[in-house]
Image 1 (spheres, rainbow, N blue to C red):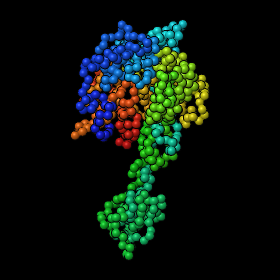
Image 2 (cartoon, helix red, strand yellow):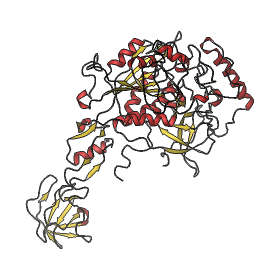
Image 3 (cartoon, one colour):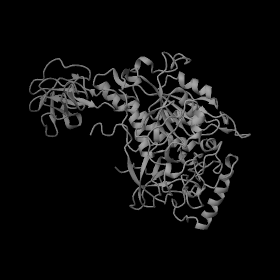
Image 4 (cartoon, one colour):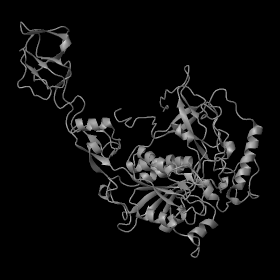
Length: 591
């Protein structure tokens, strides 16, 4: 399908557009780029208190990372650079950094490990498996702790971006959808659990489509001054031939009515009590016959339709007081990291938490019911307790998914016996993201400690499941977390809520977009209307490093850039952001 019509003015060079996206901007020279890459290499070598070892590839032979040379703005992407051997503390920096574009560490896996693989245990993280799911909690030997085993083994190969997204979508559709009847004033934004069938004919009787005169037989017609039929009042008797009566829009027409003549098309001779038509009269004109819109029992909209204001109006017209809806997936947000501030300016190595304020509204836009974010710091016990007592359908964590000394997500998942479905994705930014399924706890384990009345959707509204909630671990870098939202969270929530998947479409890109050698890149873009008969297109934006939100704040979509990049004038797949959809919620329902 073609992209949305976003008739914004032509691009203005406000500093957001990537090189080549604004006419007249020249690309950097090869020498400048080489000097920049050398500077990035030197900066990355200092991260984590160690230097790059002999396994570092020569400059110009990129391995696994997407350093500054892969950023269309020429800015290092802040967390995914040269590949090297794993180093102590490296994962923490790769996962959660400040906004400085050169402050992140290289990733710890070589490109030949980036192949599609199945799931793995968070404690042992072995090599590829044939399936997508492996039960966690085991280690390579009985005497090896999950943390020690995990550190001693190579990181698990990452899934391709498309496969990871498919795994998340399949997980969301894995169980039967619950249904609850919601009154119309509470059903907005939910998904219909059943098809909506008409409870009556619409209209349920013949009605007048206009203010005017109901007439029977040929004219002229006799009428009684002052008499008339209003909406909501049934006519007392049938209309005899040669008679006319005033009638209002929406009123029930008398039996045996031939037609309705609009007031402006008729002349009433009050003295003689006769009505004359000033235009020819056709049988049935301006009468809405019973069942014109639908017949009783006819399907109006299918199951899976999102309830919009128009659907609410249709349901009310068809006789509904409540609708069978899928409850919104309940989501808990756990913000990890001792370095995060909830208010004020960054200081003394502390930075503001950007994800806590962003994730709730984003998830609500996807159709979820979201509790306020809980800030746990870098406390493994607090994380374990929060996971074990959550009554949510989905838990979203921020940070802690890499291999640093205080990255607790993998060890805690192993301790709880979670099942890893996705452990790393070959995408930039955001490769350390993960998707897991927690086991169901003992009776009451997932409701203990929750404030009474905190959630509208209660346990009786859902079918019990033998499994516990899903968990998506997002990287701590803000744009990397956005990548995790569109890769794992969006398709998972769509499945849990019974929503249709976002329609994929492609659009022309108006600039060269550099690609990663091995991984998919997600690049913020903005739609632009074509000029002088040109085609609509998207323009890539600057400030697209993992720690940056400036680009995505100005974007209305993300371009899916395959390994190797794309040239200006070619088409790329576009993912719309939830507040800028390319298609309305109900597209396809009435066609």
